[in-house]
Length: 133
Image (cartoon, rainbow, N blue to C red; front, side, top):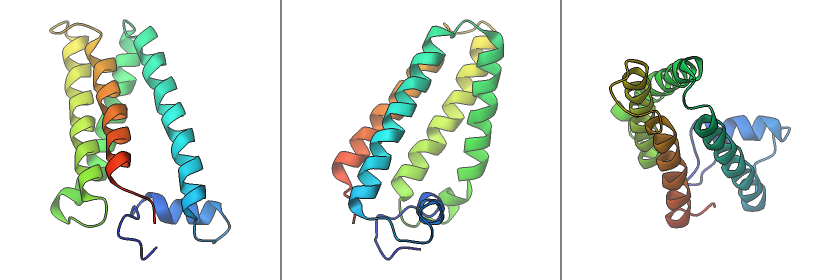
């Protein structure tokens, strides 16, 4: 794991393996960050366009549940990137809740894409206050 205080305990080791064991440079991380933002924007747009699909709502709910379960240990053991992990855990829980409520017709279908947009905006805002080492 990197000695950078902003290194991510999940992402940094995976990205290091992808680079063949080399520690990612700030330029590498910035390039990947831009790619991630574009992918998240595409996911938001896709979910917005298909927001009335019950299958998509169920899939987003399952993905949110996986996210919430995967990030739960970071709530109990804060470490590097604790703010990001907690924020994304809240987003995962919100996706599960919005998917269930949309599927039961309790809230409008645009709610799930709105949660994804908040996640995207929150990720961009966090990047503005947290620099890569």
